[in-house]
Image 1 (cartoon, protein in one colour):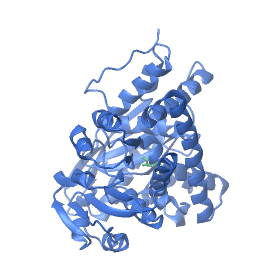
Image 2 (tube, helix red, strand yellow):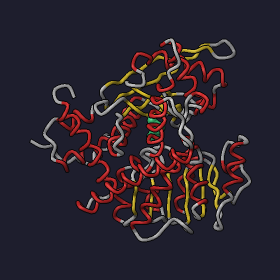
Image 3 (cartoon, rainbow, N blue to C red):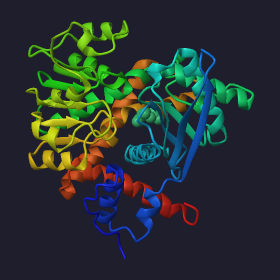
Image 4 (cartoon, rainbow, N blue to C red):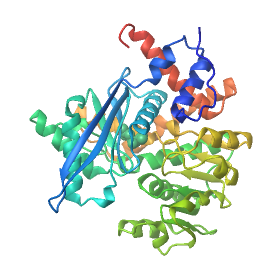
Length: 426
Ligand code: GLU
């Protein structure tokens, strides 16, 4: 028997839906797709800490190792109030597909804590991080599971992860985490890698249609690490950023926003792009964040949270290309709307894979006790993206599949093949 086609069941997460769809397309034997969808390990931990004022507070955290058949678990740690078990499992599954599609010798994992890091002092954030790491300590390690930054975490948080783990082992273990500060064995180019990959993905998609991103109008949702670097690098390629949105609202400029000024304002600590004094504020409030996609544009870069674009937002979107900088920003319904309209969607598991690709290069440097120069790292990220896109584009053409479906099929196939080859205990 083979896997049946999935029905558009609302209770299925997008990643599970995609995996079932890919399993059906590949006509995998019954039971195989179930095994690939189910996370290998889900750890739920309690994180009690003392606040600076002496009171006690408790958070819940998770670390999910979704697939570790092809290599150690790999994936970020997210600090956000909406983090929960189901979302972490789903994001970990996306990492399994991402590393498989990119042909990196890694599995897929994800972690997170249901906490708003903006409401904690730096000392409290450090205590939360250390307690979380000690709770999941036994499951971490350079050959077991290697975390990295994600929404709400950064290089400093990774430094605490490295330190807490190293204390337990008894010597410095830089390879337990990626996205670390340079002084602790981090990689040059890691900070910009995800944004660089997003812009490269946009450029590759444009090239298949005989054009380039030069002169294109770009709208971006989210101005965190990914959105900010994508904006900076796209401007370097001659594109115009005509709209940016975040939790505070939307700013726009037909002539192109002054991205350098936006970056400086952000570095000076503004809460939202609407406070930067750059461009025109056309809407305020998080509920308007997706309105940025309604601005006249050629390329849309959703670089914020998952499920940001549903069918309604997809109906308003004007761009011809959507490059998913975030994980899971389009719901399956939005995907259908865009597909019907002929919009080219480059899926997250390829489009934002520059980050994990650079994380892998960081691990290579840690294993070899070397530091590569920045140009070498950037060139390697870009060439890995180009090779993966070549495979993705060829497969999508050969089988008349959208990039989304082609990417899920290639990812699931690599996982299924690895399970099959390993045999009894895949
Ligand atoms: N959090 C990033 C992602 O979702 C990076 C993961 C990593 O570098 O391990 O791809």
